[in-house]
Image (cartoon, rainbow, N blue to C red; front, side, top):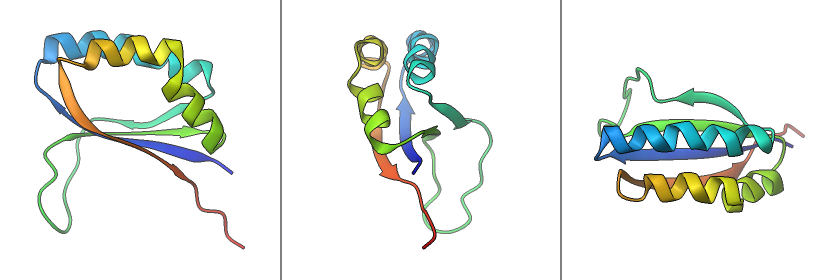
Length: 98
């Protein structure tokens, strides 16, 4: 069953964040991830206005998503992001109808 990594990111240093954006896809691709959205235009339809960058990545399964996040490649990307942005990153199982 597919799994998704969802990130809500507050970019504080756009120049430094570009370095993270160069490194993150290396890990994402290595672990079979596929960006479904990576920032871009959005509208808040209900609730408080979303002001953070939202990224959604699809992985083959939950374990692979976790391996990607814990990987050496993604650790390098996270180190570049450390002073450039703060955020919330979650992994969740996809929906599979009964």
